[in-house]
Length: 308
Image 1 (cartoon, rainbow, N blue to C red):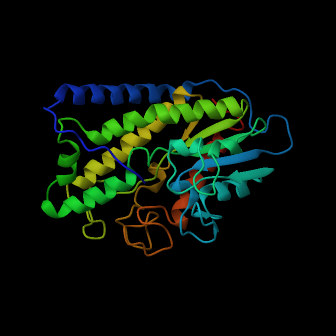
Image 2 (cartoon, rainbow, N blue to C red):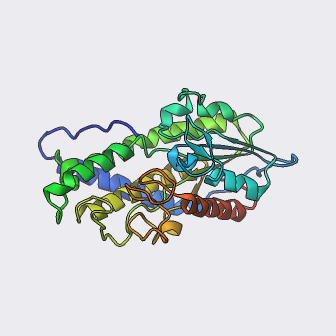
């Protein structure tokens, strides 16, 4: 979870902010049309069984969730791709998801994990992709906001930090990530022309009602709704990019509402910064992976073997 760009201290850019708002609004309009996309070739493509490839970052790989099957990538055999593969009884299953992956890692090796796209072949039938969180700076955002919270526990010091230049830097980060995700989808289609391609969104990390839970999650009170909205913008971008690049989108946010990292240990599917279940901080635990798998399976069943 790598570098984010600091907002430059330029003069206020209100118009830029309005333009970004308009861009995201038009994204919403486009996303609303997604349901009308036509169906094309079917999953399985007339063969016996489905060849499934899973691509993604740590939200896919499942760090610290037992059993870990790849130390380099912190990959679990109980992550949502593994659960999905077992439930669909696929003919072959290749999971190359890797903690810390950005869109770059689709083309370049990450430790002992080769370029993730190398797993996608001409006869691949199903590809799931969950990426973009690290490109927009997910890890540094959490540490930055936690570090700033003590400045004004009742306020929004983190939001102020990311809006210091007169526009929201995190919205910019998300918009800058969109073409990178689009490029990955185009490459998947090029390598596996008949594959069903499914973009998996990110789950609900913080209370959907905007409430906070300091010190369990050490953010200032008004930064909780700001960061919640940032997560929703990231998912809206992924939904839109999926639609524009002939892929399906799986909403894992709605099914995980009420199980965010502020909830009691028994109820949460996302662990807080000091996990009580085996999972990485601010990541899904085994129940969270199960919930994402159910969302993916529901989409695969709903499509009844068709993709957009």
